[in-house]
Image (tube, rainbow, N blue to C red; front, side):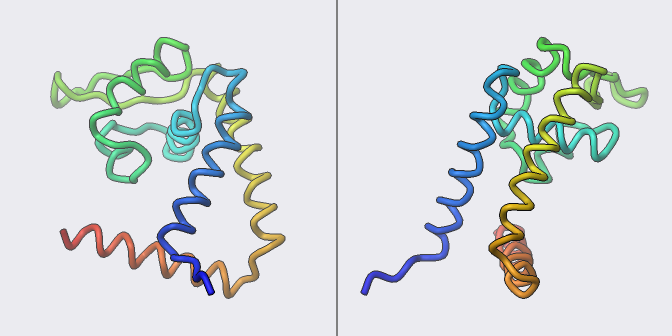
Length: 140
């Protein structure tokens, strides 16, 4: 009997979720990771690139290029730091808020579909798994 390996299963779920979001965001010239960044910026109100990296939304090598694209599309604006001329934070523009609203709808739709399959115990187990993986990544 072929047993499913949990890391492979999680990877497949993540890949399929990105595929669904990529398809939905195609009309906005965005990819799933960029949509998730807009979603998190909306949630935080304002965010630094470092905060986005620390949340695990995007890898450090990709942050500058991604934020530049979102700024070029008019979805975010940079706010220079008053303390450090090299630092900045980002916030959504009006267009960015409109796109984020669509991203939020897509995420909420996926969330509702997941909840139709997963019960509360399953959700708690997923949260426990996530915390475990986060703690393991910190140990390195």
